[in-house]
Figure 1 (cartoon, helix red, strand yellow):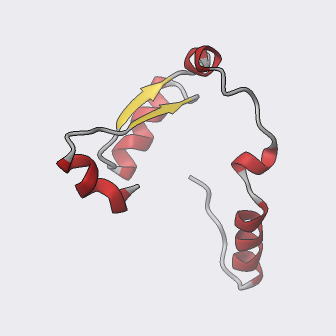
Figure 2 (spheres, rainbow, N blue to C red; figure 1 turned 180 degrees about the horizontal axis):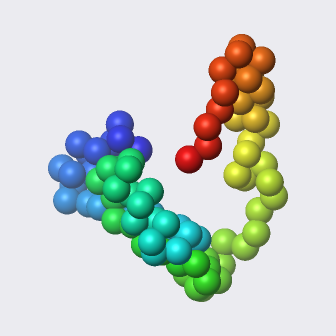
Length: 83
């Protein structure tokens, strides 16, 4: 998303991130990563239920290409540290 920061700003837009995490966890994450987004906590998933995207499979979260990338990273001797 950072590659589009200037375009979003030039159009006077703002990116909103909706997370299932609780407000305190989300606040800590946002402070560490410092992205220019509006962070919204929705631990009860009310917005998702209202918008109706439904559940998607595990490949929506971890597509095979990404999983293979992590496997190659580990096989290369590096350790993946999830945030």
